[in-house]
Length: 458
Image (tube, rainbow, N blue to C red; front, side, top):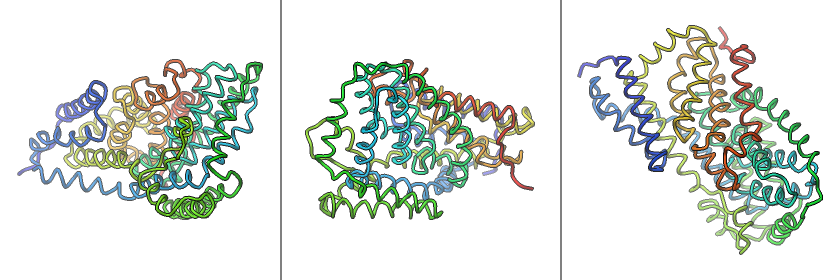
């Protein structure tokens, strides 16, 4: 059939329908975002047919774009295996025990923030950090008499630091992949906004902590966690070796897969020959996630995680989201919107401001920030190239606003998870999650002032 060009009205209608469908699906019916993204393919079918494209052609567009998720999919599966192996080897428990030993009342909030930063960078997940160190710190904070909202703010700030900065984080991998940015370039660009915000946050937590009295300190919570971990694992420097291996490999600029799998292999050896797990146990852990044999509910919530299967839902989001992006792109559905934006905002600053606002709008409308990553990257990728802007400028905006900002939106799935796990409402911890709201503001300031903006070389 003869192909037609989409009008601005048709393109806008398609985008509005997709946004409304996902918003209602998540907000009203609590349907998984991956399922909704796949169903959006069907929403696009009549639009594509109107433009002269067959369903088989539309499928081809989706598959072509979805092929981009093969490399990050391998990394994600490797991350799941690594987390499980680090649990079994005692790597994460050793770091947790070491951190708990350092806690003093005055420096509790600062140490909570730093520990959550470290753990989230190591694990590459904010949710995993909330369910491990986050839960422990909430208990310790209660013993210290610290306002739970302040403790939760420090936990959320630290947890989302690694979710944004870790090369093993799903959001880091996704934003770098979908914008076609080398992952280390993406991380370097994010450091320019995140590190200053983290330093200011740390200073604020130190100031608040110094003013908190330690008279009500109760070490029983910390002792019970440490004693439980020491009873299950050999806690010393040996279990830390896998992390050292990963860090060294990354510093040597080895591939991400090679670095992580090298650490996983070393962790498996330590788990089998030092911690006492069997090879069969490790096979189960690597696939289904680590399972600790204890009746201690706190330790179960701290340790039971990881495995390849824990990453499958994210892979579904990759395929569904990238496939939808491919359909929107190849059918020309985005071209009218792209031309409208570029004609209206004819400057690099204007395009970046639009991308910043679009990302904010997406996380406010849709309860999952993966949608923001897919839509904004698809809409603005070509515009950034047109105005000589490197892709890491766009990937940084996605993370500054989409990743960190999502934890402050009460109806976002990440914020809901944090509130449920920590037992503090999003609105209560929001003022104290300093990193999460300072970073987007700093990102906006960089755009307005055109500071730290990477340009494509002529």
